[in-house]
Length: 324
Image (cartoon, rainbow, N blue to C red; front, top):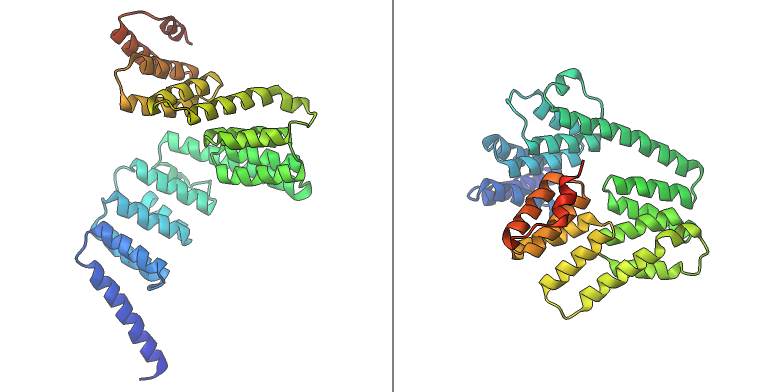
């Protein structure tokens, strides 16, 4: 047997072993097994996709298998294949998970303009999201050009803020860090960096960053420096206190919502309500958070529940009812 034949037989045996080991497990476990084999370099990417595709054909309604297969197809560069599967298939309705996969494929492939026959399959909400992506791409192109021709602290700060608005915090942090390397204590970069730190509840880093800029005479920093510093210190005190987890959550949620961080406060409040959903104080807090988030119906629901438990009316309900 020559060397090439030996290699071919060996490859066949490895694939046969993989297929055999997957034959008697559930479809999802078999998909995971092929993924693991690929990561361990026991089979090629093409072989993995081929085997996963066969499993999907036998289990077309399995969302987990569909997501795993198409995510790997997109990462492997087969974006157009994925789009064709969803947008040209005769299935009656595209589910939410299908929409997410299509959106991911479009983002990865940087395709933001769809042919009319594709658009007929998509909801208005999805098309609006697609329009926003196209506009975001144009904005990103602008910021990239700014950095290309003028790579200073300000240009990196602006792109960092843009990434943060898109929810791309890792990319935002990278640009903000670069901005602060080029221009220490750049107000725009510092402000956005601190917002991300608060979102990640990394209040110790907030204090550390502000300490580094204490001696910088910049009016833009002074506008919010004291507020952020006191909030971070107060949150740190709550974390280090000997109070119960409930007490800490309640205090932290109040601190965050009263300082404009309603989303973080909302997460804390949700944890509280999982512990005790019949506590009038927790329900009133959730109502106030929704009030700050301008969600009138939700705010009314929670304040009404709080009043039902206490048997008393509240000023907060009046404020909520007067919301536009």
